Length: 301
Image (cartoon, rainbow, N blue to C red; front, side, top):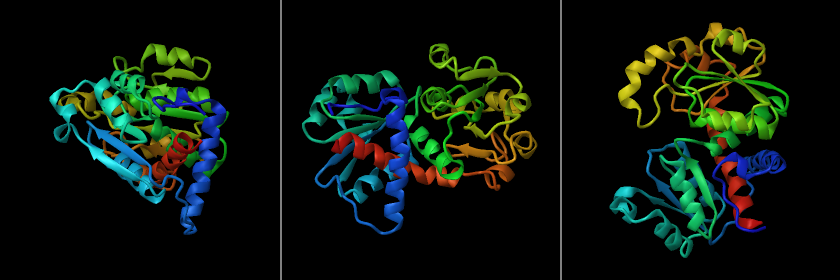
């Protein structure tokens, strides 16, 4: 296998993405049984963080440690990136020192530039446009609880943001139907929607969209960098809150997911996120196992 990057879900085929789910479950099972599996001994992952993180940093760092490798945390304040070193120069330098680079940043263009000039795998840990690693965890979580997601109905409520874009990609690649419910002015990118037009549909009414849903997903109303818009967004997004009344319209066995961190009482009520339909803690934990499957795929094949 030649050099592969993971910048969006579309960088992998449907069969590869399905295989990652099953491999993540196998890796998780082995870890829970106490099995020692270290295929990345001597391997180093550079982790560039231009956005703050809990789950992304801990899952990648723990995953590399469990696999026998090592992860290096890099922030703009502590590296030459913060002093304006071109991203293409950083890509060339790091390619001579580490085995892969994970970057969590604002611009998708920056990630694509890094990949263009790197000679090691580049992993998108989050950008303003996509969050593909989270979708690996979400798809693994659904499979563990309900089996294959192919043909199921998934509803996204809230901002047409990076998570919404990644769910649109996932709908096409994993074969489920996606209804996205967003206020006007906050719709997902039209080109991304058009790329999966056979699998996605826009709804303006949350209750209509959620009827018959197998999975309901939301995210914070104001993402990192949008804090000044929080009060305005709270008014606009209020009709899209996921609460018990809304979940009652979904299928009885519908699951609820949220990539976290969550704001209880805003995009989701406490009784939903802490309730029996919520699988957010498994979802968060599966970031570790899904990403270990990804690292294994990129660095050992």
